[in-house]
Image (cartoon, rainbow, N blue to C red; front, side, top):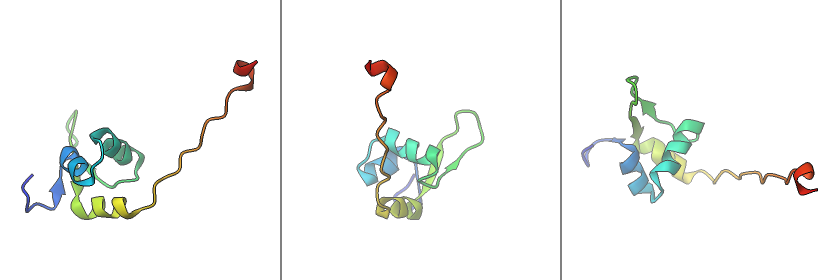
Length: 74
């Protein structure tokens, strides 16, 4: 997409945010980052620059650590 466009591809968003594209796709899939997916099979994501900025200003989501399975530990 052009530099003037308010829309970004996943790669452009990842470059801008200094994140890996997989991280951006995961945020899109989980709903943490708002984006729009084309309805064709294998459709690409489009992300508004404003939505990316909003995602970057949010505090990081804390993942819960998995507890070791007691049966597996024994």
